[in-house]
Length: 370
Image (cartoon, rainbow, N blue to C red; front, side):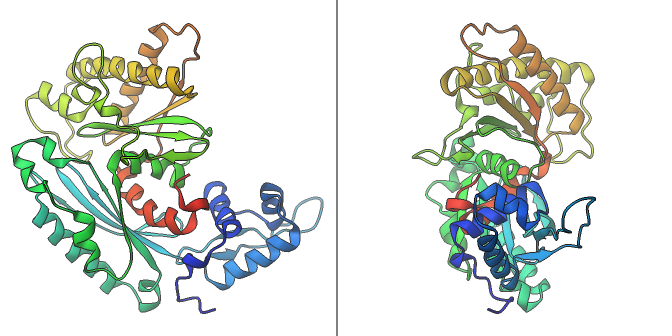
């Protein structure tokens, strides 16, 4: 079968499982894959041979150990498939072309006062056309799809966003493209990026909170990201908190900007917040995050909170510290307090998470994030 044709739709569950293991754990020899999957050595040999022939895996250099036979690790082929990710944010829209190993090959972004539908469509269409033109024909044919990460109900952000009511971004973009288009909530996709591309050693059950202009989250149970019947599971920013309002009213860049009286940049450059103001915000946000985390633990028995966000590293560390401190001070009779870990994706989480949507559909076991 030709290597320049994407055959992802033909992958079996065993093939997807092998690709997922290598993606999460790194290069693995066939013996390790057999042990991890329970498949026979012959089955692993046959499956790996097919995945290599179809361009999804490559063999690494021979590894010689002190005992036993030399082994040849299998690793993902960077050009095995490509995924487009479109992230729509309050002030920044991003488009990325991501390869099979999770590396961003091409990227463009645009800052806006408010994301208006026609402007976003123009940005996405022009960007996709530019990316396609930059790729050789054999790589262009291996684009699996476009994923879109966007907040739901954009019109709830105020009158400036009213034009989004009744608009269907997925439909509008899919009409022009030769590959499928997927769309999910941006905070959900941030959690998906941690699952697929992240470096943390994750338990099978955990809570993920992403602090950006507003806060959002994701819930992983039994190793799967749960979407919910309305595709909005883990909408933690909407959770009421004891001090009044919702989580997004306190644990968000928007609330920090309100304290400052000015907007903050959509990247780390120029992020200049007086320490006292940031500390006061982090303490208040940390208490709100702790309440949400402990509530989730009481409901679903989650051992870990992964906290990430579109903020500088030092700001995120301050927020994590205050969240841990608030959790330690809360009553916990009958439940175990969760650990709190920093996410590994940072500002890239949502656009990479968008790219995980077609990746998961075609390459993850069950076609699911996890």
